[in-house]
Image (tube, rainbow, N blue to C red; front, side, top):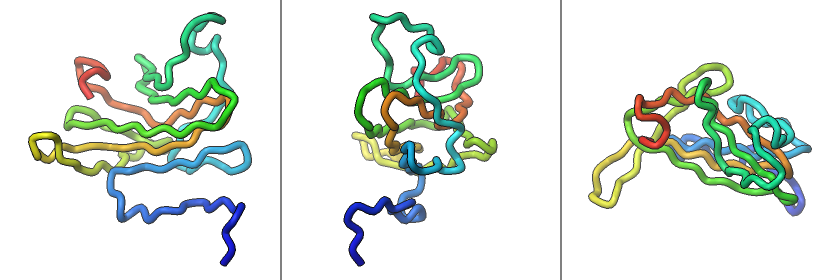
Length: 140
């Protein structure tokens, strides 16, 4: 089959990648059902002035929403991994997101959760809700 120029809705086998959550977000496709939401990026929503640097990632301190921000004029891809046993992540339907494992530099098995996400131009993708450790997001 000639697939040139066609967008495939889910071109990976989820069972082969436990703990990896892929979201191909675009203006022409509906987002995956586990995504909390996609909105147009607004500096005001994040309390940013015209000259303030825009972060790529944001975690709402009150609700724990993990967001990716693309303030550029091109689509961007993000790879975000969270690791450790001291957090939990929930999808848009409040279901626990499946985690996986990796080996660290000492070859110890470590729990992890990885997001592979494309984000449209000038958009914010709210990925999931995190239950964070008492030390905050710096500990994951």
